Image (cartoon, rainbow, N blue to C red; front, side, top):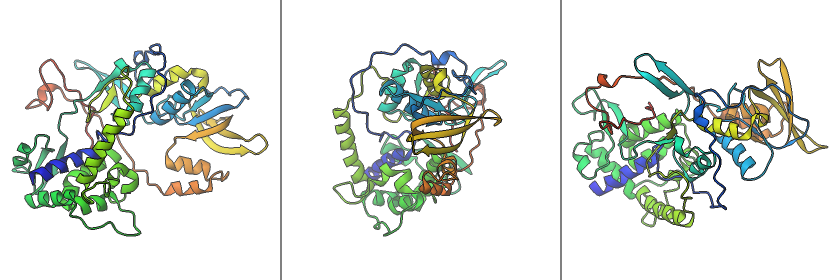
Length: 424
């Protein structure tokens, strides 16, 4: 089973947020001129480079109105403006750009400064992200975690070894680690290995499988409960019994049937690895972009809000509308323009922005309310209300080094551990 377990662990790492199965690289375009440094990190976290604006925009319509200034909205507005020459306006309901990317700086007497993120605390590097960071002048602000360090699962009950609860590092040195890897029982390991090799039941007809259904069918109940469920819950903050496999983890879903040696995930993964090699040879990253290794996570020296702040500084205050909450979106038949109505600040004022196109990066319930509401601009958007939005609370704890009985994994003298938080 050792060779099968090696393949299984590779598949488990695919499901982690640091998967090397990254999105396809962007096609290489004509290299842009190196941008002037934007010095986004010179401002303290959570202080947006664009101050809240209640001023009404000019009557002229913009090419694209982008709703939401998180990473998705900010990067969209940046590329449309810089690389496609479109006039854009970026609207955000909060008082600062960033959406759910809220980076804060806390000074603790006697302990120094702590930077923490109240929303997402790390990102998976991709060629598209590295290109964006380069063009924003953020190469020197990027920090990368050590991708060689193991992922841990905390498990209580059978399989916890000699303790009521224990941390289990997923194997990285095979087959040697198998002797001490107690999280899965031997029957559980054999079941996962057989499933990874392709000894599985066919998928159900006429039904979309949840993450739990798919993984259990392939790797067994024990592997799902003890390894996949903790990562899935931590990354998505959702219930793997309800998350749709083909939508939530479509790269892994595609592996079934992709391989040449049967329906197993291992066979599909081998084909996918060859595809990735071909893609990277055909679209190599620009050497001016920050380089990274598979398995690494990234952030910025002053938190993830660094990226939206840099975009806001690049666009300029006249292209940013903070403290603007979208309440309605209509389309004028005579001019073929969209009219977006916003509540400004505390809601006592309104502003109307005209645009030829509108891109919404807002959460599903808000998008359903605007597109499928009284204006009925996109009737099908009403169904977005059916998407459950799990509540998420961020709890930040800091401990002095001397409180740890032993060094944390990856720590060496003079080289402090770089970690971006723990997902429970």
